[in-house]
Length: 310
Image (tube, rainbow, N blue to C red):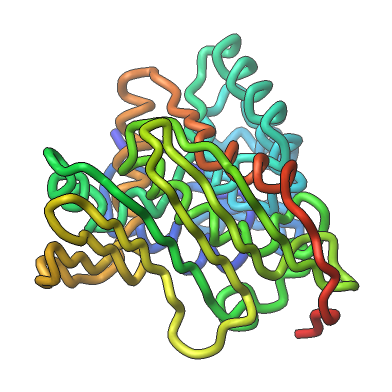
């Protein structure tokens, strides 16, 4: 029997990624969409609702939900879903504070439901191959280049510039999710500089430095002011030669040789992991990528830069 799923939030990420991934598989059945911008229609396929309360009152059978809402309201909505007895997938970032996520994990445990903090970039096709390539090598340095045009990748999404929206760390956290999947040693922030538009509460760019518990230096540049093709690259220098992930993990080079170049299908892996969590009644709520963002905000120096207008 498919897992009966509702998507909460019918915006760009739900349309572009979640719905196609669900439709392409046979593990989940999309039974409802919830968004205040929709009209309520319980006879539609999937049924549509303007609120989570309306879905719960409808009597439609739901096993699990995916939260594709802005992070500022994710904790509130997740709390409602857990109280309803539904398993919950959180889009990244899983909240706006570390405490929120810990609270949700505790609520889910008490309710006997699964909480899955998804990190879609960990399911890019090159990540596991990169881990295998790094096995037996000593990492000497890591450089992260994560730049994109915010008007293309996040058009009209005002929430990203508000407190809790993370600004450039919304995509940058994807790089952190890959980094923490590849590096076994703990990663510590040592320097952060944030460019803050004068009319925004979240940074448009960041220049960052970290070090692992094995004393491996890591440099990262995030920038929303980039134009043209996004730069989503992680260069790893090792004692046996370079390992490079590009296009967000869809392309892998080892020792200068292209060994993988494919479409960046990440959400099939996300939903496979969600199904596994539900089947085994085991939550997956890794906050390592989110912790790096929090550390950068805590130690970061700030410069006010030109106002951002889309």
